[in-house]
Structure formats: structure tokens, C-alpha cells
Image (tube, rainbow, N blue to C red; front, side, top):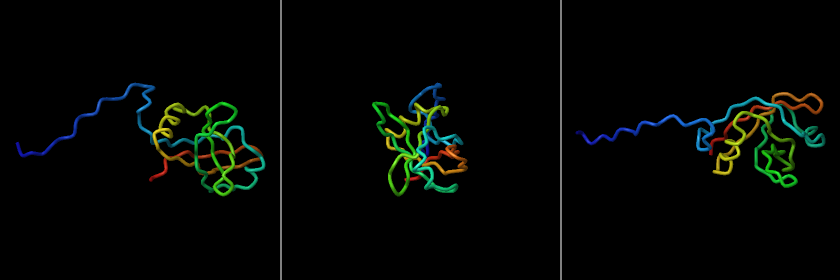
Length: 114
């Protein structure tokens, strides 16, 4: 043989595997928005995403880039458990604000390159 090492074929991961792909690209609505923080952002802005403790619950929170205060949270998106595991394992995410109407805020969730 020539000494070239071929990559090992990857087996498909079963549904619900927490080690699955962490490349999320989802449009969703922020939950539990905080009006005072929401009033200070505009469509097109990017908000970092963090895991925070909120009353004993772990919440995937979107945070104001200047004040560091929670603007709203991500919930009910497909793969939320996997997203939490990816964040715990060091992956970074942000949401881009797409639309704000009153207390409604639509965002695009995506992975942030290191």
C-alpha cells in the first residue's frame, strides 16, 4: 500500500444522540421576552446565546450584547436538548434579530465560529 490512511466511515447517529451535529440554523420566536431589553435592540442585531439559571431551571438565553441582560429565551425548537449539550461542550451560538413587533421577536439561531 502507498501509506495513505483513508478516513473511517461514519455510521449514522441515532435520533436523540446528544453527540450529534451542533450546526443549528433555526428561525424561531424568542420566549419570555423582557420588554425593557427588547426595546433597546433592532432587527439585524446579533445577540449571544448562553445557558443561564433562571429560578432553578436551565434556560437557553439570548443576551443583550452591551448590558449582558437576558432579552428572551429559546424554547420548543427541534433539538433543544442537543443544543444545550452542545453549549455545555463549548460550542458558541448567537441569534440574529429578524423581526420585532411589540413583545414578539423573531430570530435566526446559528453557530458562531471560534
